[in-house]
Amino acid sequence: MMELDELKNAWTALDDRLKKNEMLESRIIREMKQNKANKSLNRLICFEVFSLIILLVSLPIIIYVFNDFPEKLFIVQILKIYLIVFTLVSIIWYSYKLYGLMKINLLNKISNNIYHINNYTIQIKREKIWIIICSVPMALLAILCYAQLKVPFNLWIFMSCIFLITIVLCIWIYKKLYDSNIQSIKNSLEELKELEEE
Image 1 (tube, rainbow, N blue to C red):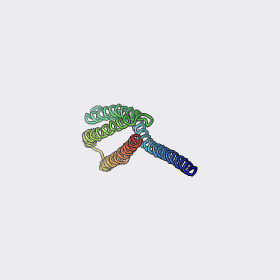
Image 2: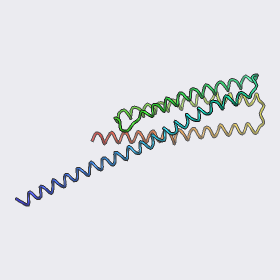
Image 3: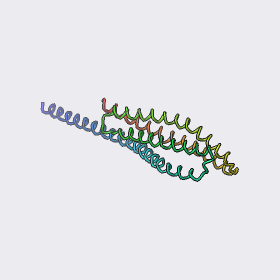
Image 4: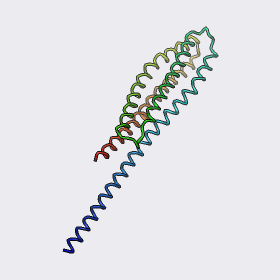
C-alpha cells in the first residue's frame, strides 16, 4: 500500500513537471513568434518613416530646382506641378499607412492585429497600382521636357538609367521589404492565434 502511494505521488509530481514544461515551452514559442513579428513590424515602420522623411525633404528641393527654369517652358511647369501634387499626396498616404501600422500591438488581441495587418496589405496592393498609374505620365512628361530642352544624348542615357534603377528598386522594395515582412507578421500572428486556441 505504501509503494502504491509513493508511485501515485511520483506520478503526480511527474505530471505536474510535464505540465510546467509544456507551459514553459508554449511561452517560449509565443515569445519567439512575437519577437519575429515585432522585427518585421519594426522594419516596415522604419521604412515608412524613412520614406516620409525623404518625401518631406524632396518637396522643397523640387520647388527650388524647377524655379530655375524659364516660365515659358510650359511642359516643365506641368511636370513641376505634377511632381509637387504627387509628393503631397504621397506624404498624406505614407502618414496614413504609418498610422495604420502603429495600431499593430502584439500585446493586444491577436484578431485586432490580424485585422490591421490585412488592412495594411490592402493598402500596399492599392499603392502598387497607384505607383504604376502615376509613373507613366511622370515618365512621359520627363521625356517631353528633355525633348523641349534639347538636352544632349548623354543626358538621355542618364535618364534611361534612372528609370531602370527606379523600376528595379521599386520591385525589390515591394518584394523583399513589403511582401516578405507582411507575410512574416501574418504567419506569426496565425501561429500565435493557434497557440491561444490550444
